[in-house]
Image (cartoon, rainbow, N blue to C red; front, side, top):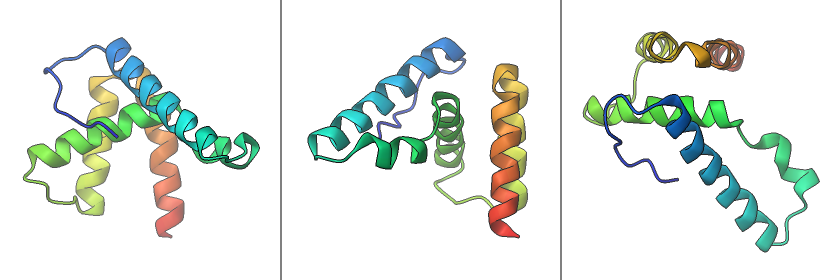
Length: 103
């Protein structure tokens, strides 16, 4: 996926549009590859989940490409929710899944 740095303060609408385009590209490529959408659609992230992952990737890149510890990852995701309140339910859902996968 195209995770190029974007201008600081990019609007949530712009981030969602970029994420939507990325997801459409993934769907298109899988369909061209002959995959059945019933087999892969549920495994794809939502637009908001992809926005959160893109923002997280930017924060990792800004931190010298170092993968965050679980505690730092929690803080990064929480800060994303604070910076973009409309993403708060998505961030908390993702954090819950990350905790479940770790435990």
